[in-house]
Image 1 (spheres, rainbow, N blue to C red):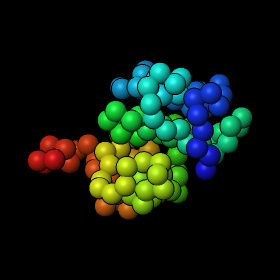
Image 2: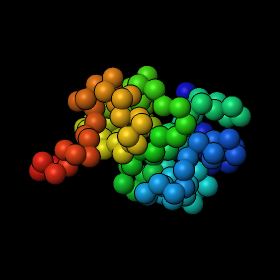
Image 3: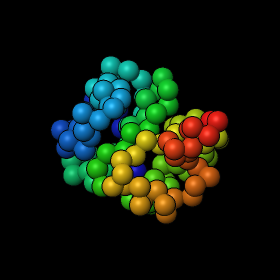
Length: 121
């Protein structure tokens, strides 16, 4: 995993994210260096995936080919710390339906599904 700055973001990394998705402009603001956040990817010029966390709300944005291994690794960084993400607690992960099967293989104590938000969360 590479932690990169907005100056290191390549067109290939930008292409992993869909600007038309809800709240995605915040991810692009991080990628472009307009707002603070974190950017992690597997490769600069030929990325399979990238993850953006914007610092205002802490939202995680996953782009590219996301596997349960990628999600577990990112959430482990979030939970354990490593000075990249806020340590501890659960994380709200908005993920598209086609990636729901990937989430089933990720430890469920690490995230909150959006359906659970209506259950008093």
